[in-house]
Length: 488
Image: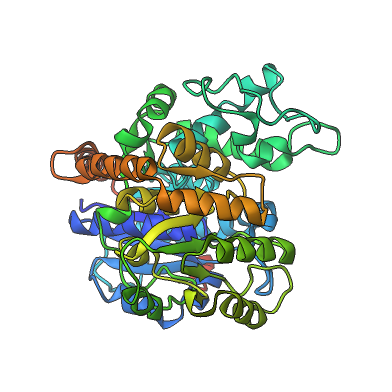
């Protein structure tokens, strides 16, 4: 049987990007791929999805509802609402769709064989459970770092040791016990942000509890995939592996496989900023982007802007229309241009990988999301980290203390600190040497014979074995197929 993998990411930009590169790797290996969007995101993508679909006869895009109204913000602050809605509503539509794809829905003449395996985002545990219930082997894919995964996995131990929930008046610089392999450098402020929250009864933040449960659930999948490299997270991977049925470290995927030009970008990229970079000297520009979910206050915006201007370097700032509270984006963009004069360029969204590899970029002021972290590490560019939430707190500690490829500015948003850290990242030869040395290690991992390359080959073999072991699908249930008609 030909291997046909259904790839199902959480419907957030960073998750989609990562798993789309993964899908591209499967296509390169000769597998069929169905990539499952939410209805909301597929509408945002519009015709782009169809264009990407046409890029390979073995790739198609389908969608299921996320259960939320179109005007729901689907922002970081509403994460739990999205997860709960998907558990309640998406799971039903997903079951019907997967049953039809497993059995071979009548009326489909697209040349696709039945689905033989599901690779689902690890924070969508229902997708793994439903697949196994329908007789489809399921693998978990975590788009975050292995170090943050290990932190979530260690929550019961952290609770037992009294480390979480972090007391309100606790010393955030105190070292943390309970996360294996990180006792020497992890502080309270470096734990995932939800460790600082509390339930109404003083217990764990409900989001932290949920994320721990999702993380522990990955042990039920046939295997766990990380978009990471051994050179980056060898210790964390070694501590996670014994608790999973199998584990694959196959990143950074963006540097291994070219994703379809369309089908994954929820924000329109402004390519004009690369022409602006062309007019600047080597390593002279500060690139600023806080990712696809972070929302900052007008006061924080002002502190960033003042600090960047005072640092004295030209800067390219990605400012999403929904990024600064209720402020008008056009007014803020004009404020940046006025303050920075000819030294400032501001865009809604940028082609980040092209920007980071541009000769003019000297450092990256980032939220330390895992995709951005992998992209900057691969290019060897120094960083200044201002983590927003979740795993970003842990990632930024690794950047500043373990890899020493940048500076960690977490929990502070003051113009003087922004100015000082940007200047240091731009001027420090020690940081630049560390960043470039680590980039060489990462590139060895993804080269022929490297650990990530070999692990990806092993994963493809594993997927093919699963497809061969998948029993001939039963005749499709007429009631399930009828329910799925409106989805396809």
